[in-house]
Image (cartoon, rainbow, N blue to C red):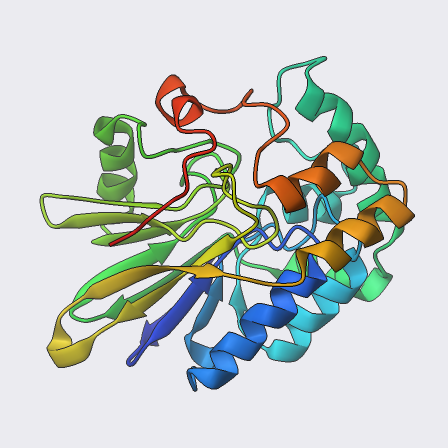
Amino acid sequence: MTKELGHLKGPILVFGGVYSNLQALEALRQIAEELNIPPANIICTGDVVAYCAQPEESVRSIREWNIHCIAGNVELQIASGASDCACDFVKGGRCDSFSKEWYPYTQQNLSTHSIEWMKQLPEFLSFHYAEKKALVLHGAHDYTSEFIFESTAWSIKHKNFKKTQADIILAGHCGLPFSQEQEGKYWLNAGVIGMPANDGTPRVWYMILNDKDENFQFEHRALDYNYQQASELMLKQQLTPAYAKTLYTGIWDNCEILPPSEEKRQGEALNFS
């Protein structure tokens, strides 16, 4: 299902992957207030819940904020009553093992109202902005759980542009912020706010779009938040210690999902000029 938003104007805040990290979400809401960006111009690319300790509180915060949000693979799975997150982790790998801890915890700590909200989420958002057509998706158009990274061949991204007729694709899922432009098409991933970007810092990432003078512009921005509290809450709930540690170190426990190019950059602090 695609939800049409019509024409948007002014700064737009884009983020994804809250991952039940309420502390990061609250910090981002404060940023939005300081920037005077209204909820109608704020977009979440999915996965509101996952690894961290406060899934129900995170969903409530998103609902109260009244922003635009699509369903990530986690929302789709929970809404359908599925027994796993459908991330296509390597069977028997560390991510697969960890998901058997956080996914049941997330299911058990969500209210009926929150699950019903997930059932109503669109898979895509479409809108016009700065004389361009934009589409919001999670992983890829035909497969919500597809991991698309900066190093992923442009031909794969091009298929998504061709199918959707979009000029701008705002994506999520892979956990790493990046931006690419070819032939007047923009593939933008704001990154996630629930976990660091494997760059050796506890910072998380979001994106600001702008349409000054009808010219399309974008900017990656880092977010500082109370990661100490988020980590402590995870340990208190006996969630995966490796993920709780990542909130401090900014280093992923493993690179199972990463292509070689992204894996080589582990620990390198991101710097978007």
